Image 1: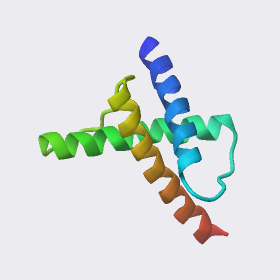
Image 2: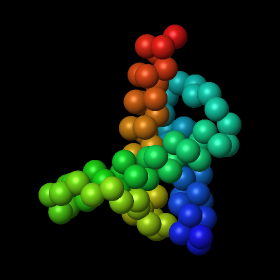
Image 3: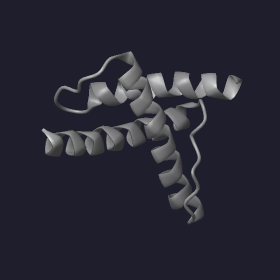
Length: 90
């Protein structure tokens, strides 16, 4: 249970920072920001494990400065992919 709360906090922080960095406007409220941040934490953690260990593992980053940085990079990637998917549908 505590791990889920940490991921939610990390997702909120990473999603908010990624939305502030990423150019343009993104819709969605606090839940969308948290969801993109949590997805970003998994994307960032998986990419980080691929770069450091050479294998893809579905892992989330921890609640640390390095973890937040990796999660923000992952959230930016998630925002970019989400923008591509919603532009095609519209």
